[in-house]
Image 1 (cartoon, rainbow, N blue to C red):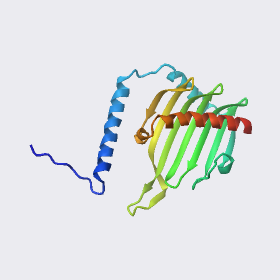
Image 2: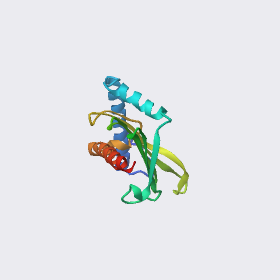
Image 3: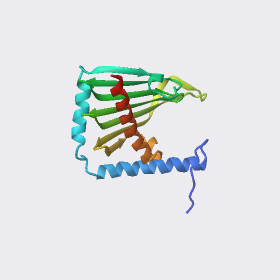
Image 4: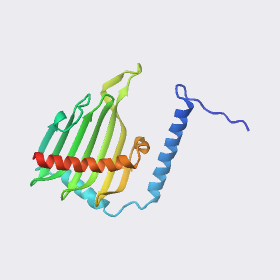
Length: 188
């Protein structure tokens, strides 16, 4: 039996192996998540609260720019926006402009406790000449994190980039949400 390896021009064997491994892990995670119970207890309530917050047009808004919340200002700057009702923060959105694209994280709260995080990373599209097209982005990562009692109870990842990041990155998302909540509670 004669086996041949397909070579992708411009990619080293190591990069090809890494891509194949990531694809296999993503497929495995997809199959595993389908095999699991489709509704984790508490997720439906979190979704309902998420929808209630996003549909409430009576929320008050506070916006911080760049240095007001960032230790080091990035190439594209950033904003930290919070929405609150009756002096209680219900949503915080962090948007950061980077040299390769932008990131956004949305933190949702109920009764002062973090219940949900939505993260998205968009990269600028690369042109044929290897320059970046700053007018166009593509989603490189998208993740949803359902939180109950300060623990992540369900994760939905629509892109595979975060597989390499590990659990400490997930823990940092919760810590950042709590940090912003405390900071913005003082600002209101």
